[in-house]
Image (cartoon, one colour):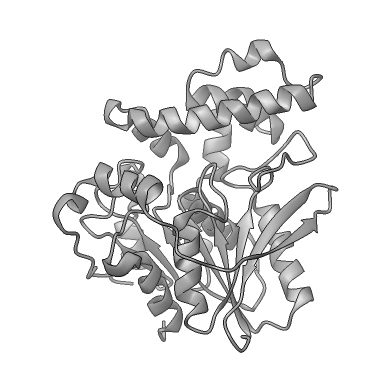
Length: 320
């Protein structure tokens, strides 16, 4: 499929990747949105909290929104996407990953960029709960990698999943880790590391037989965190084994439904391997859109409505 020519145009300071990224994550006012929470007990006895928003009059279509690293369903990018969808005949289920809804999850393991079994349980829960004829998956950053891996690693997915959108998706986890270690990204990795270390200290208190205070002191980088917690907690040999097995780029060829990947060229979180231009030109189901600007989930638009939010709706309503 030919590469998609983007119509996104940034103005003024929003042409700067860091400004658009930080503004969108920390300054943007979250759109007003009514959310109704449901707690789902998973097959391993842990839980996930889902925040639903409904379009007036009801709908047979629902979009499942997947947040990024250490995000949640209250982030402005989730509420912004949900607002646009509910105003246009879509119901929304915004997922909070294990341990991301404001309450520690019950088990030592939590979530990661490739933990698709939780997503599969959520999808089947929704299908059993209501009579939806169409499901869309929309993921941001880590959530984008998650949904692409989910769609590509399975022989089949529920027929109700018609299309999906990945925004600012790190198709190469190791590549994105390397990008985040660059000097100009210090503010992001420092913020992530602060949150992740707090989570690990929480695990030390809850699971002293599995985690230790001495190990927490060794977490000085994102790579350290993945080596000390993410990889062993989720059954991987080490951080690089985790990155290799869960990077979604290797699964794109197997995806059978239309997908839109929206990755800005100036996204400082992404590496060259996150822009599969050659692959997208060969495969009929992959629509790769790489606007010049947009930073990391920073496609700022007028009236606090972001380009990626209206673009996702446009893609879902298209004849692709």
